[in-house]
Length: 232
Image (cartoon, rainbow, N blue to C red; front, side, top):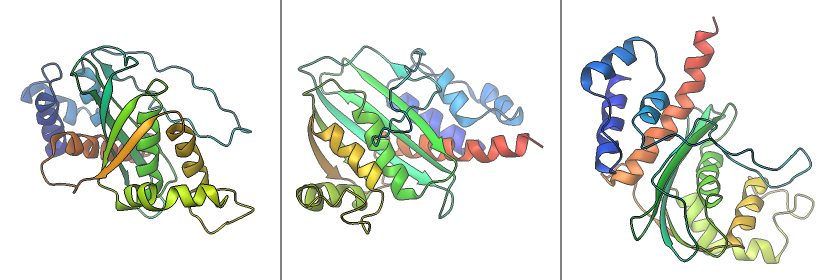
């Protein structure tokens, strides 16, 4: 746990956020049982209220929000081009799972990140959730390149998603064999209003933004286990 905190602190420095907590404070927080997310959040540029997002039980489109605050240096503006890194994690075949994204404008005037978790989730679902959550931050018509280490996500978007949509495969009644149809339907809803391209990157190879998302996603998933243990 301590090593994960130290790595997250170092990554925040590499990504240009405010000074992370020092080692003494870090160790005290670990001993005190604070969550990894809480430490990272405290080191962020500033907290923002997470908006209440639409979508009820009758809405087929998912909405993702970490509900823990996020860091940003500005707001995304129409006309800006963006790079987004996204990652998901599941601590078992059915979770708990966590997701995270890091979003930055190419003119360096905007950057933000967020993460969240889900008690029951697969790794692929969390990979999709990370991408969806990041795209939901962007204004209509935005140009964004999504970098993701999930072949499942990138290859499906680049090679299969258009065909799935043309054949109606995202409707359970037409083809129930496509996994995670609600996630894919939600992603399509976002892609329809954006100019997005997807690129695969190798995971755990020292790409700071990708490593940062990995740390956030694992932290978010682990937090559910920590909370569960603290209930007793």
